[in-house]
Image 1 (cartoon, helix red, strand yellow):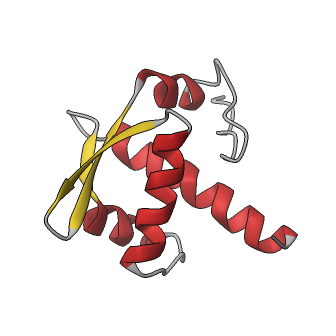
Image 2 (cartoon, rainbow, N blue to C red):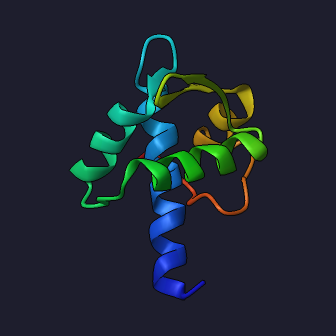
Length: 99
């Protein structure tokens, strides 16, 4: 993986976790997450987003449920701890420190 591609992937994973954390129930489906990524200039197809969600699930940051043609992702405690900078999940961009 090139450095630029790695940066995009790590940034996208952080954006996905933050989008989930912004929800009252920490849950969104993949099409809404895809739209959130597009807001940040990361325009990818559904299969790519599903692959990144699968990666996050494999690393314990989210749980996934298949719902028809979308995946429903829910932030886990581990994902929330990464966002709070209590732990670091290798492969996910570190969130900025709050000032």
